Image (tube, rainbow, N blue to C red; front, side):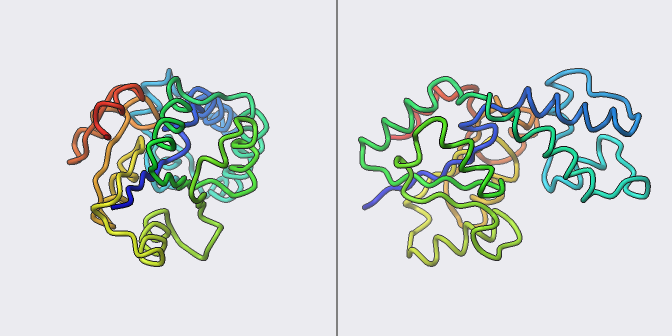
Amino acid sequence: MQKYIIWDWNGTLFNDVDLCVESINYLLSTQNLPLLADKEAYQRVFRFPIIEYYQAVGFDFNRCSFEKLAIIYMDYYQERSLSCQLYENAQKALEYYHKKGYRQILLSASKTEYLMRQLKQFNIEDIFYDILSLDNIHAHSKKELACVYLKHKSILPKQVVFIGDSVHDYEVAQAVGAECILIADGHEHEERLKKTNATVIDRMKDIFRLID
């Protein structure tokens, strides 16, 4: 039976967490709001949907709309993200499972053009069986996109392992009935991840003992 791994990108394969802390603090500074103290403070407040995360850090949408804040954030983040690297052992894992015959799918909430610019610098696009992002089809969430994709490809849940770094990634896996592994080195704090029924690991290197 064909096996599939569906990878999240930001905070799972692509290590942009420090930049995201810097970016949200820049955005907070534009509104004269208190900054997040460090990476752990960021991980404790980060969540999906992003609008709830923005509310949690103190933004008042009556003063500045969520849409405008998001544009300011991305203007700061995107070019700087091209200096971010993959997590240690991320490319090794991708190449290992590619050689093992797994079909690997990238599922990201990023805008396609931004995602492809980030991917291009690592020359890993060809490893992926498919690359999916929210503006590839008219989906309202990663959850909907995953459900539509697996149904369209006639992929059974027992063939799939989701790997991510957030409670939302677990929710996506739950929506399709697939196994989920969460890595507690990304955007969301380990305590919150452990409240799910997913398998939670510390680092990418731990993935090799869980799959295959």
